[in-house]
Amino acid sequence: MLFGNPIVEIVVMCLALAIFSQLVSRRFRAKSGFKEQQELMKKKQKEMKELMKKDPSNTKEIEKLQKETMALMQTMMSGSYKQMFVTLPVFLVVYWLLGFFYGGQLLISPIAFPKLSMPDFGMLTLEMGYQRFYFFIYLILTIIIAVVLKYIDKAKLKNQNKGEEKKDKKSIENKKEEKSKENKKEEKKE
Image (cartoon, rainbow, N blue to C red; front, side, top):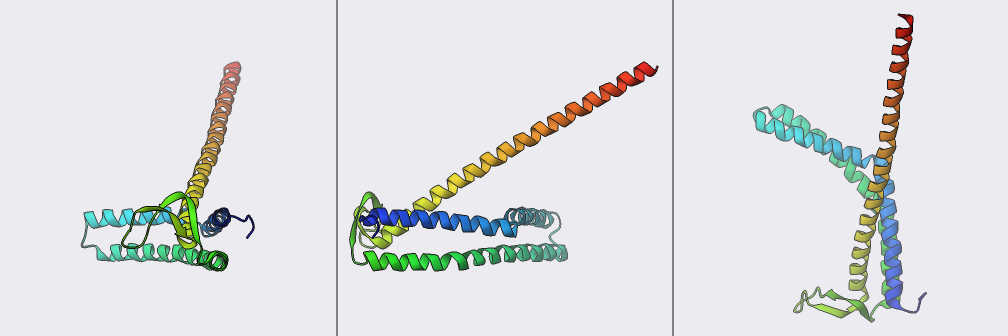
């Protein structure tokens, strides 16, 4: 027990795990070219739909696109399996530690969470075991961190696109200047 308060300790552990899982996820997605594969898969699926609408009897082409799509899905799944092999042991150790320190304790949460057991399924309560508190807090923190990271990525992409637009404008201006200089040279020669 680090802080003396089980709720604070569980929140800190969940925060650390959520950050860890997001970093591992980003690492494996970057290595496997996840976004490029996703875009390619969408393109293949679109082609397959168009082909099925135009000519449903062309089964050879449809089967070829299905095989390509399945191969892409398999490579994407292998990346998520690798990610799971890294994160799962960490999660199991933390879950064991939570059980060791807080097993059998009833926590009083500052936030009401729904009950997940019968007969009071869905009713809000402040009292809960560490497992349910851990589950809800981890879920909430993971969603928040994912949204924040997505927002940061969009901001970076927007700044990157602005930089490219500035370069494009400068190159267009440079070309115009070069053309005007060439025109002036031609006029002087005439």
